[in-house]
Image 1 (cartoon, rainbow, N blue to C red):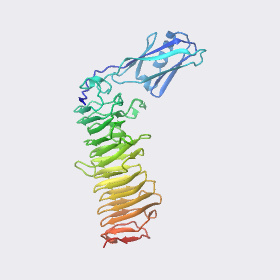
Image 2 (image 1 turned 60 degrees about the vertical axis):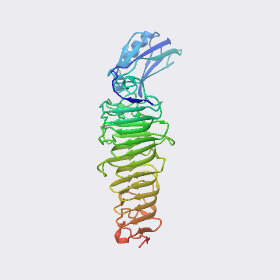
Image 3 (image 1 turned 135 degrees about the vertical axis):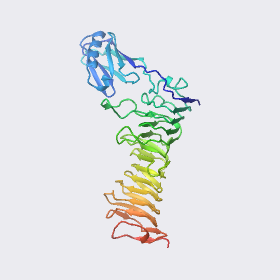
Image 4 (image 1 turned 180 degrees about the horizontal axis):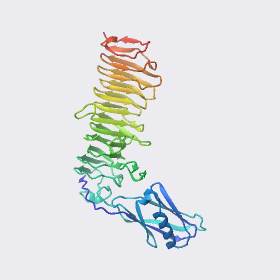
Length: 422
């Protein structure tokens, strides 16, 4: 249980790999080199290692694939060396061989990691840690006061568990964009994998992508980030995935622009969720839950800010100056609107119960298909907007401590109201 600081002191060193053809080579044998999701195959025109190295190096060096252009390929006669053109930026090379058009299949093709990548942005570089080693289970890892981006080998800590991670006054980015600026889908890990039971984030970087993978226990993730700006267009600055049904993520956000499992194929297991604020109740926090979110507690609470939800949830509670927009998933238990703005635009149809208190608004204008709410309770000052011709309320609307003149209802011609309290 050591306290470790990320110092970003690792020297910048270029990664070097050695690619070695071997075995008994036959004319027509195939040697394939893959970088990311691109690959090149050289078919041997000679039966010697040297001839394969010459032909394969020429093929690799001439490639127009940007993934291959990031590497310098050198014919070393008995092998090919692959050196990163930008020191500190790693690459991933995968080799394979096949009989191809050759008469035999007794050749080989192997890779040796000659020089490991190193640099201040490399999570795997041990000299970036005050301990001189990678963290261990249950350690506390602090990122404090630097502007260094954490970009490479972001899954280097994935095998650990029960970390405590504090990110304070850190203005560097975490993780990589999904699309590499060189013009290809990023093949390196794009999220910083932190198997943590506690994450405190108050950084101000333009990108913070986290994967809470196998934390070992439920993770309490608290965001008090002062910045909501993102380096990528229409992408939240803070992105979170991960957790499991047992070891879920308990999320608290009172500042920043946060996206949870917003991209196709991403999954996040969220236990409790509370959105709050620091100084501006309306705009401090902006949280979007994608369709891959599983709300393990089946509810969440919004004290302030703006929340968009695209996944099934049972109960939503929102307060004055808070906005919740439901654009996907079922909402089958309760919307407890204590004075905020609730916008319902999900293609799913049922809502179990809606309670509107004074100052609350239920905006149904984005609904395009018929839908039902089983029960509606309204207090004086509550408002329901839209839904004309589409909304049906299963049971009579209950007016609590008020009359029809005290609430605003859709302009339907057939509305049944029950005066619950006079």
